[in-house]
Length: 406
Image (cartoon, rainbow, N blue to C red; front, side, top):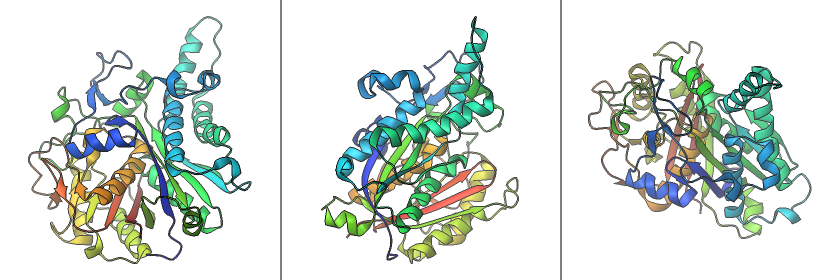
């Protein structure tokens, strides 16, 4: 453990596996999928028609009415997850010293829905149009700013854009702020682009699954892997200075002991070793060796070349089949900037309960992916440290190590 490792005192989740941390974890550990046919708009004319949608979310029940005209679906989900994390932490935000708490958020896809709304305004009589650049800039600013304003978090504030690696990168940025003296950071990401404009953009990547059955659509590391399913949602976590958390008697979910980020010099090369370097960097940062890690939460792209590359990275660090690997996002779809943050929450709950969630629907691990993938049902965890991996489009890699708190 590093001397200045922040502790994690709050968890908040909005995911296809459930609204709220408890609902998400119950579904995740049981292998229940949240992937269904898209209902948020008519997707019948698209090649991909499945997604992970957050169930049962009625914005008016959770978001103040004054905020509804100012926000879109993704910002409202982010507000929900942030609220839950802060409530779970038990922090007295009113009596915190000025500038003692800040926010670090991640997003990469959320601006699509705002852009879609602006296009509809343009098509409507008398509508006004905001450029695509403005729509994305607006979303990143609002997603972080609305959270900060609503809870009076006047400390350091930032927005990270590194695609699927973003959730871990935002949490890593929060750790840096705590090391600089900030007492509390709310960090994570909620992301998604389940709208016509967003789905069209995702289809252009060539990485979406076009399968029609939810059980066969997203199969990371499987012989039948043929792309991922998009999803919406993510998580926020409250990170605190360990001394401050102890002084107030906070309940601890765990510690963020290690973090590292790398960039592939050639993001199109399946042989790029950036993920292995990130994993080794996070382990070194935590002062741990490969044998100390009890489980790896993998990125799990379900693109054969990417799966082979990730399996090679895990094998290079741990050896062939030496550590259990799981991809719970097979139950949610890829949540982009929300995915790493949600995996980090799942890793903490895995350590708490001693159960590794299964990788849903995978039945035949590819022969060129020599990893010990947890499938079928949950497996008993043996150890107290987990490694979370994330890879973003364009060469971003991130890794984080969490451990149980003393």
